[in-house]
Image (cartoon, rainbow, N blue to C red; front, side, top):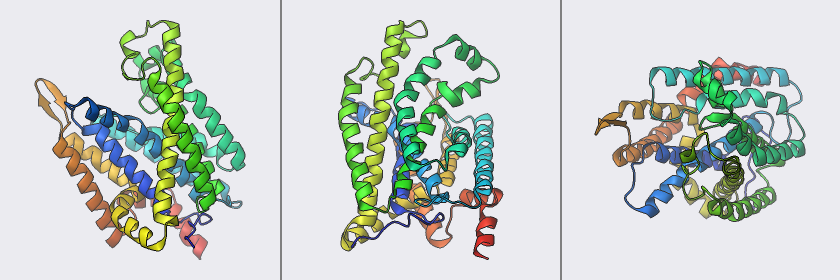
Length: 371
């Protein structure tokens, strides 16, 4: 009989979720530093890494919140303390993200501060009934990308973007990672944990629904105006016809739901291989995926180090600053796998994860609980 994931243990890690998060990190690396490809097919393949990894990352972030809040048995005692710990983590992530942006100026969008803002917005929603959480996440995901797209084209957001508070507009609607979308995706991840990712039936149903959403909605989005060229609507600018802007907004919502469906399928596939497969297959999968799983177990450390590396690799070519390089991409993937695997094997929790845990009081709370 296949093992069940430790769904009811708040401190437990689930390798399938970590492996999916590790794949999301690799996808981000590809989006950040892969150079322009001569082949149209390769360019299309690389383009897939521009949106799906970030949504998969948000999905697994919601799952992480689900595990630390009690998984299938939400905590009853100590909710206020746990919310405080999560809030402290969120503030630290916001400071870290803004600090990196202001000091290092990497040539990529940074997710850390957006991640922190999303955590703060989720605090009142953490312990709602799982059906409410799932329904709210699905409804929000269906409308949030369209709302964000329409909002960022308003005069108010344009003025806010041009002011000293432009980062606030970036957080919520106009940035690469709108919080409105991230919160919706994280709610879905939280709900899936509440329904029990240790249940083969739950994972199978999630995989079927995710497959259906991806297989039906992504082709529809691709056929809509702007679907085959991400910059099509941007070329129209702020003076684009209302009908064109609305069509693009609807397309983005359809595409987002399809991409999240794909992310759910990835998580389900990793759980299938690492948790529910027959023992021989499970052992081989765990061995082969262990470097990626290790990356996903310390995402803050790996993501932050990768920002330092790509900042150091910035150079000027033909008068343009760039960090794109196949060599850098390979080095990031292989180096991150090796670093994470060795650190996890011989030391344990990631370095920045450990610091964040202590700073938020989470570690001290664990010790007190065991005592």
